[in-house]
Amino acid sequence: MKYLKNIAKQVLVLILFIAASTIYAQKAPTFLKGEDPKPSDKKWKLIKNMSDEFNGKKLDEAKWQSSGQGWKGRAPGLFLPENVIVADGSLQITTTKMDKTVIKNNKEFTHGGGYVGSRNGMKYGYYECSMKANKTFMSSTFWLINENRGVQGCDRRTTELDIQECVGQIVNDAKWMEFFDQRMNSNTHSRNIPEGCDYKKGTSKGGGDLGGKVYDDYHVYGVWWKSKDEVLFFLDGKLVKKVTPPADFNIPMHLRMVVETYDWNPVPADGGMNKSKEDRTTNYDWVRSWKLVK
Image 1 (cartoon, rainbow, N blue to C red):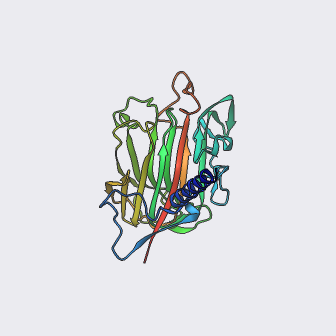
Image 2: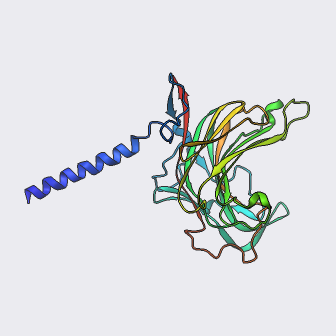
Image 3: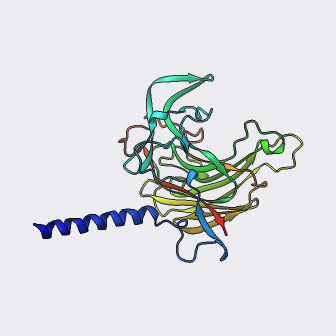
């Protein structure tokens, strides 16, 4: 009996060691061998207030908020805080069909999505998440955008960095959407330029092929926002595209994990919600933000 107790203690110690190693093992972003672009004289530092392993029982309100920050969603998809939970070691945003149509700002909302945004922002750095998309016509996304409320002058413009923007069901026969459920669809956007400011409006596209559906498995979507004019996209630890934004990307941006509707991928005839809850849910295993330091 004493022997068995000792074995049990050793097993428990091993389990605790493995758990601790798992928690603290991540010393740098996810890169395949030879893909880490950092200079030899610098190292990656985890930015904790924009990172989360989602191992708790609820959303960490000190880091994230799910109210939409004034954005209700794009009709017919309304952001519903109750559609956002943390469970089983992941952030889960579930798509739903509402029992009754809701009217807001003279727009009709029939479906529910979800929104999680970082309370903190950062300029430059590496941003990554492990995400498995839902199977519906609604989106699964991971991106950054600046907050310009209360900002004056030319910094009131909008810069947006889409790391992954996809859907599980395509309801549009447009050629450009043909593989929208099988790709890392990435963009850098410049818009809403204040009058008199010398910035170009436009989009630069990036991304890469997954080799399967976006909902088949988890993928690691990452971006190195290197400088105001250089952005590098990574898929599962491998560089897939380097782009130059249409205008200077030099304003701090905040993270967004959003499930919404698109007017260019409309609600299918059957309502699009005849799938299981699991299939209607976008899962984020973790999100991590990094900064290069000496």
